[in-house]
Length: 197
Image 1 (cartoon, rainbow, N blue to C red):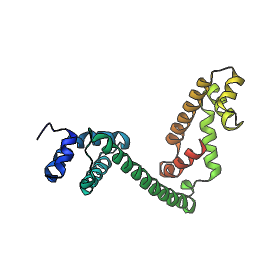
Image 2: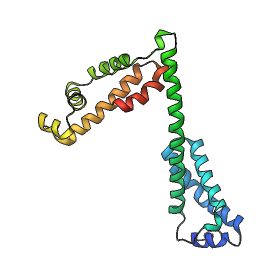
Image 3: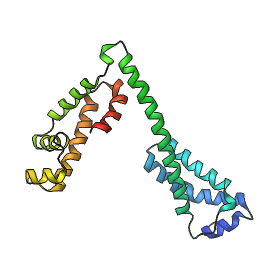
C-alpha cells in the first residue's frame, strides 16, 4: 500500500482504519515534527503537539474528507495545537513571574530585592553604554516620543536606518541587562523589559 495518494489513504480509512492511520502517521509524522520543532525549539514539546494532532486525526477519522493532500489540513491542526501551547505557557510564565516578583520584594536578603528604581538604574546604565548615535536615536524615540520618520527627518537619516538602529539598540540593551543583572531575578526582569523596551 506504499505510494498511495492522500485521497486513497482517506478512502482507506473507512475500510481499514488502522492500516490507513499507520500509513498517514508514517508519511506525515516527520514533516509535522520538523515544523513543530522549528516553532518551539524543544524536541519534547514538538513531539507532544504532533502526537496530539494524530490523536485528533484518529478520534475524528470518520470526519476525514478525501483531498489531494492531507498536509495543509494537518498543518492547520498543528498550528492550533502550538498556539494552545503558547497560551498555556504564557499563563504558566505569568504565574511564575508573579511568584518571583513577590519573592523579590518580600525576601529579607537585600541583595535579592528589586525595586523599580533599581530597574530604572540598570536600564539607564545600559543605555549609557550604547554607541552615541544609536543612543541618541533610542532616546529620541523613547523619551521624546518621536516616531522613526520624525527622527529620520530630524537627523537627516533614512527611515529604515532609524528602524534598524532602534531594533539594534533594543537587542543590545537586553543583552547588556541580562549579562549584568542578578540571574535569580531575570525571571522578573525579562517580562518587565518586554513592557519597557
